[in-house]
Amino acid sequence: MTQARQRGPIDRGMAGFGRGAMALALALAGAMGAAPVPAVAQVAPGQSEPGLPELAAPGAYVPGTMTRTIVAKGQLDAAAAVAAGKAVPGTRTLPLRIWYPARAKAHARTVTYAASLTAEPPRPPVHFTIAGRAVADAPPAGQGFPLVVLSHGFNNDPVMLRWLGENLASKGYVVVAIAHHDGPITQASGAIPMMLRRPLDVVLTLQRLRAGLLGSLAATDQVGLIGYSFGGYGVLTAAGARLDPAGPWAARLPAALRADYTGDGPRAGDLRVPGIAAVVAISPAGGGAQSAWGAGLAQLHAPLLVLAGTADRTVGYDPGPATIFAGATGADRTLLAFQGAGHALGTDPAPVQMRQALWDMDWFEDPVWRKARLNGISLHFITAFLAVHLKHQAAMQAYLDVPQERSDGAGWTGAETPYAAISAGGTNPTWKGFVRNHQNGLLLRHMAPAP
Image (cartoon, rainbow, N blue to C red):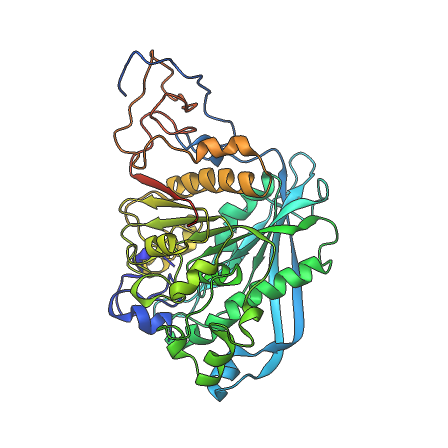
């Protein structure tokens, strides 16, 4: 799902909310001063490259990884239901990729992930591998870790979110990534049944986790949801945003399904799950003039972090994720915007097999920002946000309370410091946790819930 899907006839990134004219078709088809000098720390060890903000670094645990599969009868067969114009039951199979805090021997063999993506027609799918840090089936490092459910973009694969899953596992979270098995992005109509299936998949996964799928490995009483692109739409809906029965998204559903699942319909509650403590929406679909929720977005009450690129040609920006941020008036919410970035905020750096053609690389890479920096800054703020709301670490709020909304031009105050010094916040206008002279191009905005 990358912004680059600006390439022409087909959007791929947003998973269904195309770029340009196809958007809806795919969507639904160093300064010195006299101020006191704050304490300074050096760049934390283990970061993938120098200059990233400090919370981007991996945590103390070795990430483990394993797979599980959910098979559930009596689920809505969304594709068949859209074709029939009424609810059709079926069996839903959901493979899960799970990352968790683990113990592993020194030099334990790490996993290599493999997946494939739709190529530019008429080429066949492109297969790729990603070298991971996780150790397959390593012994867990404990029990009762906070739980995060992760939902990928349209026609994506969970391994594309390895950068996030492994990092959070190393910081003490169990991350369960759902393989939704969308149709190819080149078939625009495939997005329509996924309007219902995405939140239903999140709900089903949490039901099985709360029923003991992973035993006591994860604490399931309070849960975080993270979704990228179409996955962002799915987690916002599952966390409480109510689909607008009169909106343009609902209009693509057959009348019977629209009556059942949108607004206050008799099955609308099936799309939502209680006990959500935090939501992160990365380049989320469903906002702006073609809003999926309308006023129903105000029904979301969990704390919300929205990550977006201001040059996103797949889901837009404002209108788009910025209007989702503004419209979620029932939630305490934060918007992190990357100036000039496109849609591909939620994926790993492009593997070598995906660097041979522009279409393939655009699933992963941004045309302007380096992916390592995009991922590192995202990890920094997601780490702080989840620590506040899932681990109840109030001190981590200081990383979210920036001295000014726009990062550009923030100097370094006080006496000369090491070249790679990290701001400790306080009186320093450089955002807490950022390396001096390395924070430009960002906007961080906060809004409290409406009274």
